[in-house]
Image 1 (spheres, helix red, strand yellow):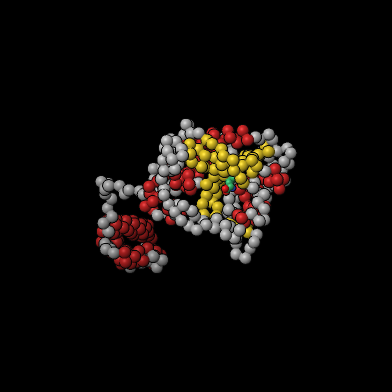
Image 2 (cartoon, helix red, strand yellow; image 1 turned 60 degrees about the vertical axis):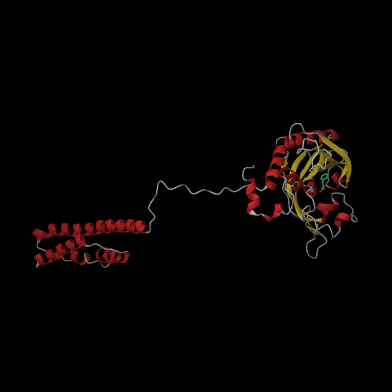
Length: 345
Ligand code: PHE
């Protein structure tokens, strides 16, 4: 009786040794037969009681060997099969293969220009204030001293939200002035970059969306000389140390006095070229002393505080710098166009 059971166990041991599955399916069959929950080895354990005492230990060892042989054989076969399928698929590692080029993205010319401007003002203590693009009439116009009958409010110039006379897409970043001045107390020193919208016919020179950077400085005793000095510093940092600035009187409802700033042409060094239309000067921004009415609208005591503000368009600056002759290129995101800025930062 015992020798028969011994024989059975030894036969299984031989079978495990000789087994050579060639596919995943055959390997799975091997696992089920020898290692599954209803495996063929398990019933042999209940035979132990039928073995004569002198051979019980020997039989136990045989069964344990059977179990561990089945396990190690399975692991070995599994590893072999995986390696075989990998090399069959031709995915062997070729250490001499040339590296795959990694396509580098590039910054958008508008971001490059914006970042440079923000960096320059950050160095003299201006912090960035970003605000909503969907604005109400009060922050965009009323607080900024723009009267009800001002042409800028006209449907033709401003995108109002559907069925609304109140909500609009901001037409300038000056709305951020009102947002900031109504929520923080002076001293205020912020720079506000962002997108603005105007109902313009799209052409090579004009678009219905563009970017501006607004600057705002409110404190006691802020003077026009501070404005001029700040803008001189800015112009030299952005356009080069030999840059000169020129302030021309102008008009904005929210500043008094108001001015427009020209810089000496940074393309031709003021020699005269088609960018400056042979005048040696290019217009870059609008600015002025904050109208006391605007301070009062925002709850700031205009007898105690004064301030200056300026605002500039980014598209035109980027177009001059990179010699881009059609504003639409800046919004189309054609990869062939954008790739040309890979080396710019
Ligand atoms: N908001 C003005 C514009 O869009 C620019 C400006 C800003 C002028 C701040 C003066 C002061 O043209």
